Amino acid sequence: MIMKKLYSALMTAFNEDGSMNDAGTRAMVRYNIDVNHIDGLYIGGSTGEAFMMNTEERKHLFKIAFDEAAGQCDLIAQVGSINLNEAKELADYAVNTIGYKTISAVTPFYYPFNFDQIKYYYDAILEGLDTQLLIYSLPALTGVSLTAEQFGKLFENPKIIGIKFTNADFLLLERVRKAFPDKLIYFGSDEMLLSALVLGVDGAIGSTFNLNAKRVFDEIKAFEAGDNAKALELQHTTNDYIMDVIDNDLYPTIKLLFHEAGVDAGQCSKPMNAPTPEMKAGAAKIYAKYFK
Ligand code: NGF
Image 1 (cartoon, rainbow, N blue to C red):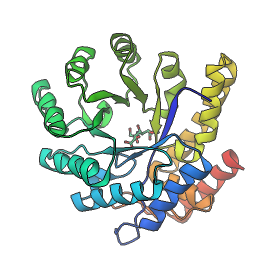
Image 2: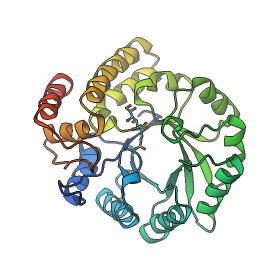
Image 3: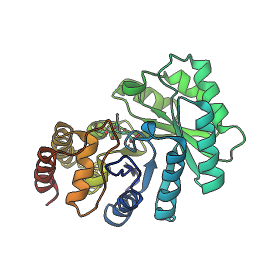
């Protein structure tokens, strides 16, 4: 039994007309539980295309994922939004209506909020809620970089239990790890997981685990057994896989790979690309190369 936890960032299946494809989303939840034996799912994050969904769609996603998972793995609902009222409404819905035990929220983005405003946002989301929250830190897409001291100020709210750390700043990761040994850190750059394991993260949350979880569990096992050569070899193969997926268009290709695995995962919402014959052929090749 390995100590680190692996969470897939759940994808949301859409139909060609942009409506939600519940059967597809449920099938991806099932695949993660039944085939990947995943520790948990991160729902409504970047990979879930949540920032292109309206409030009702985001609530619906929380509902069907919770229903399908039926207590068989951990679940984290990502409620963050540029609209604080929406974030609060989603948090209240996830916790009080559905029953999620853990939520997460991306740092508020687009406008250059100062740190006091960011702290206000997190405290406001959590006010009155009996829950725990992971900060979702993703500077490359949000433009928001928090320092170790600022993470510490956010942790003054005892409901904030850790960070989903999607960032290649390994000095910051090391500083945060050392300063807050009791907080959870889930790493979010799948390509750099091995380096993050060395720095003591508690696990990982990522898009590419949806298909590649077995290889990553093996890598973590090798790392925990002290077999760094094997762990590195597995990370090399994982990164060959990730580079191929990114070259073929990340999110649409993960859905096509699900299709190759016998799961009808629908497609992405616009303006993300609909699958072309070339992308489908590319995904078939990737599947044959890494998963057969
Ligand atoms: O997709 C992104 C954008 N990052 C994910 C992950 O950190 C996001 C990562 O798995 C996530 O989990 C979520 O919010 O849904 C990458 O897709 C992967 O490392 C390939 O680059 O940064």
